[in-house]
Length: 391
Ligand SMILES: [Zn+2]
Image 1: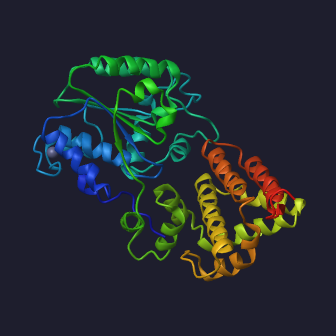
Image 2: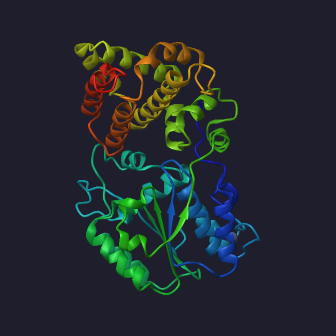
Image 3: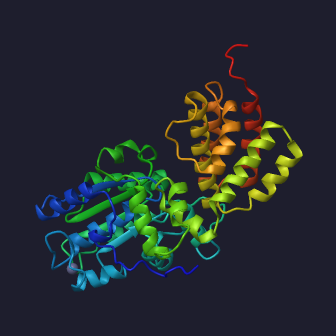
């Protein structure tokens, strides 16, 4: 399948799909000269928050701004097309490598620009893969704060505002976070901080209390489908399936489309795993884990999301019987009608927690064989529980 190199777009507001009210409010704040100096663009993984931050920063800097969007043609916009505007700065998690023992964001700026030009919905594990950090945790290290201060001390080159986009501030180490806090408390003039995050609880509360929250929702199925058509071609027959499986997460949808991981593989693997766990076939389960763990992280995460959906629908089926609105395919329905008696009040929460925990660990670069095996062994116990409280 042919994958286009670039979205045919340069991240103007018109390219930011969905979240219409949020966008309108951002546009109004610029036109009304009410730009808050520190903002937190919060949205789930695989959503539009970074794209929106880029469109917003561009709009602030555009020298020929229209009513609703940047012009796309002025000298400032042209530099934004390549993310090389001298008053636009980026901070993001990086990793230690042979070449960079004390890395800062700028050491990876080339990779960063090309990555987010190609995919402004990028998530952390995709980014780590790009900078060669398989199974390593990245960070925004202490030395980054010197780089930030140095950049903010520069006078603006061309624009009215200096913009600093900090992607995934959850990954700031304590020293860097405290330095940032000082900057937010006594902000340099005409500086705009945009923090782009997924988990506000992981940001220290003193920073959270200093920023204005701008919340983005995940993609709707219609919006995600539109976006995937832009990227993967209109006639791609897998798109609707990917949309169904991805729960609004662009990263998962694109992993499915790129990896050609079909919905059928999700189903087959889920059914196999449940069968093996229910019958407690440990050696076979280990063999399944060995094979399945070779899958990429995004595909694994997609699988856990898929499993959660089937578990939920099976539970509904068990409680309410057929005739309730659940979105199962024919083969899933055949499976679920036999499987649903084993998903009930006593074990549903435990089972859900297993898939959520596995998702959490894979997301944080856990070793996939161990994560999957742990999960499977716990599922064996949970599936044996009967729906009779206090036997
Ligand atoms: Zn412009």
